[in-house]
Length: 193
Figure 1 (tube, rainbow, N blue to C red):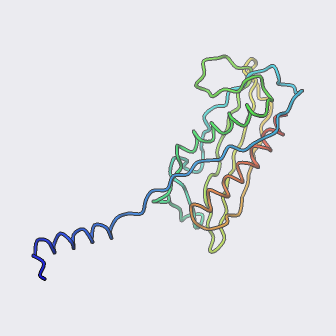
Figure 2 (cartoon, rainbow, N blue to C red; figure 1 turned 180 degrees about the vertical axis):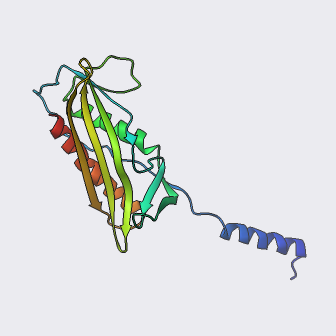
Figure 3 (tube, rainbow, N blue to C red; figure 1 turned 180 degrees about the horizontal axis):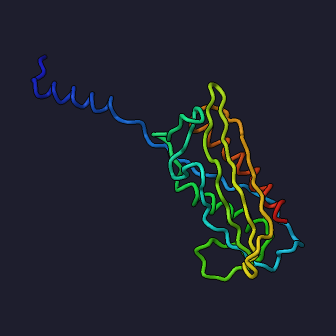
């Protein structure tokens, strides 16, 4: 049995296209940590807006950042966050603080409702730090609670975490990041109380 040249060419071409296909893009999101409700606190009849987090040092976007040293860094090509990380963080903080019942209502800064307090945040680090066979999910965020009536700073604190990853790939980074965000959420609620 002989195969015609055009048919052989098509079979080879299909084989080459199948072998050169890029790996599928993996999309990850943050788990929203569960926190206990805190009743009987100072802010129970007050409203709060959580502003869109700002970033001063690390470039924070939908891309997942990693670093091999203080001067060697990049983004994962086949893995990314489900949305811009600053948007994911804002949504997580709104949900966690709403669940905590510290405030009468917790809103994002897109709401037109006038708030009693505003929670501002600055991201100092949000990346996968890989050093040889060891890696950490690094999260460092400073929060400032502002009384919007007076414009005065009520309090401010920086929370920093380096959570060891189970593996040195993007999946391990996401797992450790979720652990770090869980710790940060619980610490944030305790600090605001």
